[in-house]
Length: 389
Image (cartoon, rainbow, N blue to C red):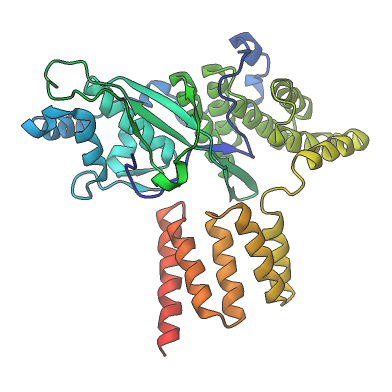
């Protein structure tokens, strides 16, 4: 069931993918061996994993108000979904600018997919509903933040049947899935169960990625550290930790963390890509070349490959070639707002105003923050005004 406008999932740094259901779960001691606390300054803010699912007073008041009517008593799951979808009540919107706790997402009425799932789960549990989490196997969405490349997967949550007697009318025999993507994007996709400790690790790892994007290396270390200790099998956190080490000049530590990831998944493209960088910086050119060759066999064209070629063609004034290259990137990343924006520029340069407007519309619809949405909307309005002159 779709419970909000189009949204994208949790952010994992540098092409990380979740390895759900690993047969071998490394112990906490294995994670602790990767840590180097003495090399980093203290975090600038408390890292409180208990706050991820915590309810605020405002959330409590919302539940007391919304679920005291006879209609709500029939099935709290349906009532909760209606509240999520109703713009007069919660009016949720997607905003990937930062990862929020349940209470922060509720106050902002916005969040990325992980934040919205966490908020919904916290509300559902307060109603006494059984909650479980799923990792949905959809194509990853790649985005960039500064010089970081980020991959987004997708998660949703499943609400089990109410057991409390006050929900006497809730007699559906099936569980209810709440998803923050349009139904057509997830229909028929398989999924894997996620443990709650992994959900919390995702939150912590997202915060580490956001700190990295802001250039706050020490903060990024402590968030990634806590994510890895939360779930030692969550390789995204080990990869993020490796990137922190790379940027801190700790090359042996970065390599150790990356090889830990590759021991779990030899085809992990993120870890392979970062290992190439680590080996190059260490002056081990032969090993770096061999690793790069292996990576190229698994992933012949990295994310944004054709996009970057398209930007080069734009700079050279070859707008037709740029248009074709952007189209090729969009066949791989149809929801990539940045590519749609540049495709709009190419079409505008070619005099294709209708196509330019269409790409601007798609850039706006797939934007990941309110700021980007408003920027694309303004450019679209300007283009439409020019067409009317």
